[in-house]
Length: 421
Image (cartoon, rainbow, N blue to C red; front, side, top):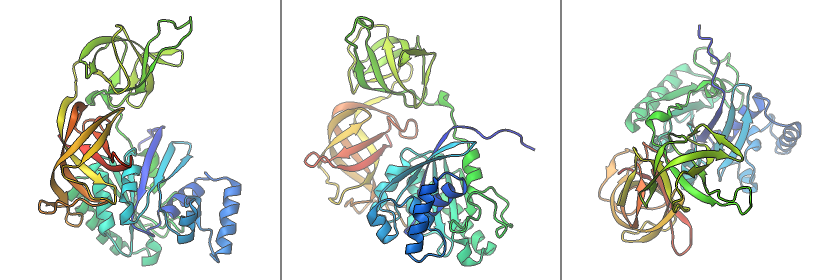
C-alpha cells in the first residue's frame, strides 16, 4: 500500500473539446462537488436554471460568464477559474470548442501543465479531438487526460468506452503523446468527476479529481536551461539604496544562484550573480517560475530585452528560425510578409521566407503542396529576423523557445510559434 501523500502545489490545466462536449459543465461539477463555490453563486445559477425550465441545476453557468455564451449555451472565450482542495490548488483554463476558436485553445494550453480533453461518448474521436490532442502534444504538455463524457447517454456501456479508449490510444501514439489517462465520466450527474461512480463500477481507475490531485509534474530543473529575460532595471533614487542596480524578471527553466558565472545577451559580457532578491530579502537560489531581482557583481550595461544566462549553457543566437506556427488571424500568412516578432521581453522585425509544410489535421501528415496558411492552420515556416535573437528549441525551454508574430499595421497578434530549430 502506498502511503505517500499527494504532492501539494499549484496545478494549471486546460480543458478542451468540441462544441457541447460538456467542458463548462465538467468544471462546474468540479467546483460544485469539491465545495469550491459560494452560496450566492449557487443561488444565482439555481434561479437561472429554473427560469430556463431545467430540472437540474445547470452547472455550466458557473463558467459561462459572457452574455453571448449564456444566450447560446456555448463558450467563446478562454475563461480562467481558480479552486483548491486540501491537497492542491488549481487554475483552470476553459477553452472554446469551435474550430474558429482554436487559437484560444493554444492560449489556454500555453501556460498549462495538463490538458483535459473531453470526448463525447456518442461520437468518439472526431476532428476537434485530433486537433486538440495535436496542439497539446505540440505545446509539450506533460500529461493529457481524456474524459469520455456523457456516459449516461450510452447507458454507461463498457464496450463502447473500450472502443473509444482504443481510438484515443492510437491517436496519442500518432502525435507522440506518452503520458495519457482515459476516464469514463458523466459531468452532468457527477460520475467519476469528484466521487467514484457506482454505475461505472467496472472502471477501476481514479476519478478526475483524484488524478488531478496526485498527478506529478516533473520539477527536475537540472536538465533544463536557465533563462532570465530582463523585464525592468531597478535603480532606487534614495540614500539607503543609492548604489543599488538590479534586474527584475521571471526565471524560465533551471536554477540560478549567487556566485554563478553568467553571460549577458546579446553583448556577451560576463559577470557573476552577487545576490538574488525578493523585496528586501535575499534568496539562496531562484528556480524556474520565480519572479526575482538579480544583482550582478560588475557594473555593466544591462537593459530591458537583454537575457541573463549561465555561461556554461548559452542559447543559440541566430537570425534564421524554423518554427511551428499556429495562425490566429483572418488574413492569411504572407510569404515575404513583414511582421514584428516578440520573444521573451525583446522585439524585432522579421520576414516570412517560406512555408515548408502545413499539417493536415485529419491525417496529421505534412502537406507540402498547400502554401496557403489560413486562420487556425498549423504550419512549419522559416522566418528571418532583422537582428539576432537568442532562442532554444521549444522542447528544451518553453519560454525562450516560443514567440508571437504581430501585424505591424494593426498591432494584432497574428500567430504563435514554437521554435523547431
